[in-house]
Length: 77
Image (cartoon, rainbow, N blue to C red; front, side, top):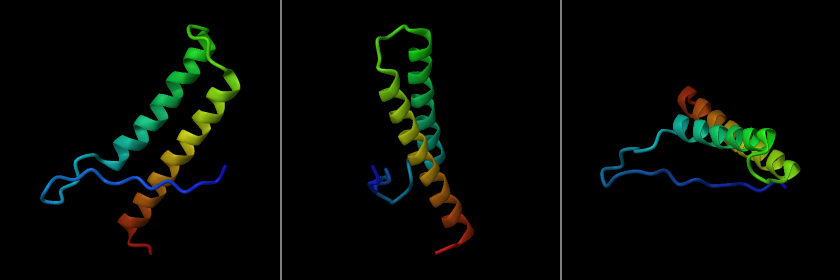
């Protein structure tokens, strides 16, 4: 599965960014980590393979957000 994902920025009517990319990438990693803990503790009946795949995809998306932000802040095209 190699699909591009476009995330619109959440801005106010003046164009001011309201959600920091770092917060979004942290949220994605946190959600994945919590799913994994649920599987490990057996609290929820979740499919381990599915949770693992979803967690990996969330981490990849968070990495892409981080890399895009680093490139943008460094002035890279």
